[in-house]
Length: 164
Image 1 (cartoon, rainbow, N blue to C red):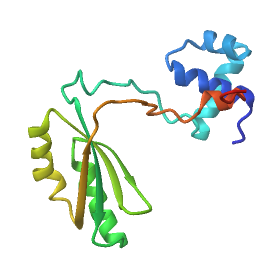
Image 2: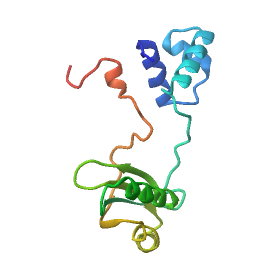
Image 3: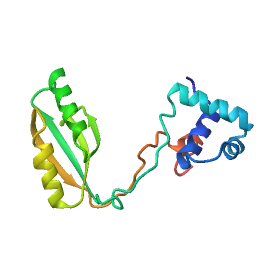
Image 4: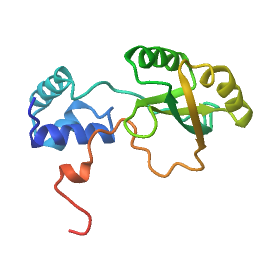
């Protein structure tokens, strides 16, 4: 699907407020409500919109500690990668896991209640994952930017750049 200016405007508006009523969205992007609804359906069918989600607060939910964990495996054989990925999917405290190129094979974002809880997660889950030969954990001190779930830079969509 080739996205045009209106598609980008719809996606940018949804990034700001995924609960925006269709009539308001249509007005914002310069379409009739029925045309906007058809565009939304097309964007969903094409996979440009993968879902609508509530952004929850780890802190409020009792997991204020965020840990970034770099993991290296013994090899990158298909079997080792698949076995590791199945194990990491089972760990309830892993919020995100990326297969990487470069120095580490995987990067995980793990949440915990406190340092003792992370020690439990480390012993029970992370250290028990198959084929791990090296693990490095870093504790996040403060969240500076959080654009989770945001696929578009709205400044680029609008053709704006800093200082212009």
